[in-house]
Length: 522
Image 1 (cartoon, rainbow, N blue to C red):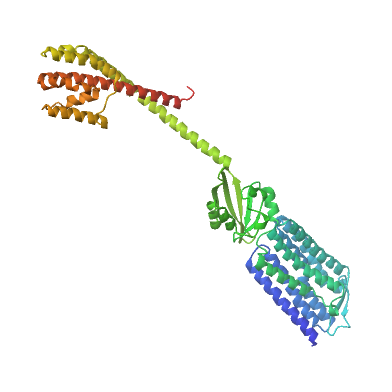
Image 2 (cartoon, helix red, strand yellow):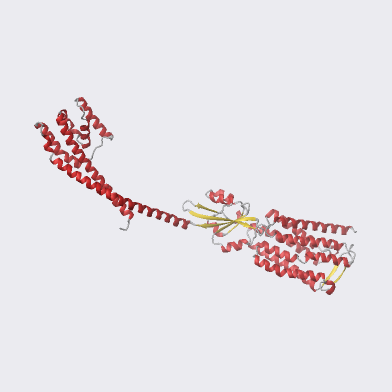
């Protein structure tokens, strides 16, 4: 076996092993597009494996046998390539299924045309060996079916590349890296085909298996480095064109994948320059959205947070995980909605309900207070009249006193109504009242008068403490003390009734105010 053939066969079998391994690897990852990629790699594995044995064939019959083995993979390369591209860029499932069912019969027809070429020679008109090659290299003269397959293959490759390039132009920065990797991989296959068609390969060897293997390696590098099959780039145009709220797309590492323009009204920091950065870094720099950061970090379904200092805005955020076709989570979508007006309306409604309940309570309180206040007023007025009547007969209690004492009592009786009507009651519990009372009690002690502290207290309460010394002689007389105590008691009670009526009047004014509050229109 010539060393040239040995080298080519080793390369082809190595290519088969690589593409087969890539098929197994991608299938087990079960990410978006991985199934189609695995199918494409299996087709290339069959292609490389069969082509290696074709080159070792000694007869045309052996060449044609291995050629048929190759076409078990070759016939389906366009189908799997188009399926891979459609799945990757996010074409709807309905369209993907439709395209698959259109291309699958074409691939089967290609396979059948190749298998039955011995009967019609429409696929290969002639098959021979290249006389200038150091080892058997088949030379094919394609018929109409063979040319049709080449048109099918290159149309599929070209169409897939056009879709990728269009998506590349429209995609965000992070997606462009991913799609550029796919485009580069597909361009390698184009380069191999062009070299072969121009006759630039040694001994007319077909470089396609090697070109597709290199493309597979590039795709695999993209899977590791840029999560190639994680998130569909076209998701941006589909989602963003239908969402009126703010949309933020993150990967599983919470890195910013994409966003729509509306969300920039909420987070002005979101610019093309932050694509690929962790959202936590952006929120940490702001420092005013810990709830939102907690939601992202813990995949919480909903949260509400407030932004802005001068003019506060309430934002509702809803998080949804994005899953691949196989059910594997590949990212997050956060929908942000400005609910400031809704929040204000809700707060206004709550406040209105509180005020309504308070008004109802006040109305009940007013109703309940009217009756006892009226009773208090009526009782106080009756007592006032009674004490006034007693006061008119007060002179009759002065019998048994000498003329000087009577004169002093009469002055007191004449003065007390004026005092009661014009002077506020001085409490003996406050500091000033205590000082005055202490002075009067001390005076009583100096005079040796006992059991007269209550009389001193009456003088303080009635505001006539300056008259106290004049009544010392009466207090020293037991009969006079009793009469004085009676008169002062009547005056004190009369003063207390006046104060009770004053407090009732104030309470009535409060009730009127509460009634106006509970019924503002009436």
